[in-house]
Length: 143
Image 1: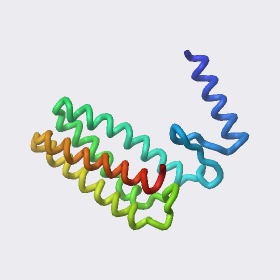
Image 2: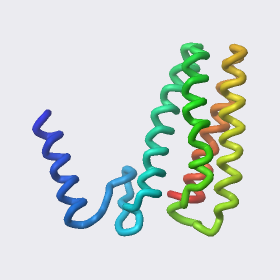
Image 3: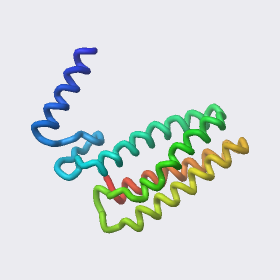
Image 4: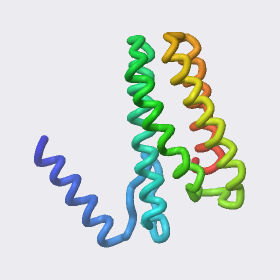
């Protein structure tokens, strides 16, 4: 198994060096301008969001208000950066992206507030709304 991981890393590095392409999503590659720092920062955000999404959903199942609040704080700290992101497509619709980001922020705040009062049903509903914002943004700006 260790050999296959090393081989995969070497293959990825060679691919990047030779073709200046970075595998980003399961079905997508970026080349040229998409290897710049702003795009790399955006991709780091998406990884954080995926990890936090898993943690929040697990914590909702367990009724762990502290973990929910900690993860939502982590996500809320990224909102200013999210509002500045340059999208993969529909780049002229930045107002729509900021509107979705603001709604995402409100849903996260509601999630944390509901979890803080141990209203896990309300927290689940608010977090589902936040997850729908992710889908809305991906549909308009990425997929």
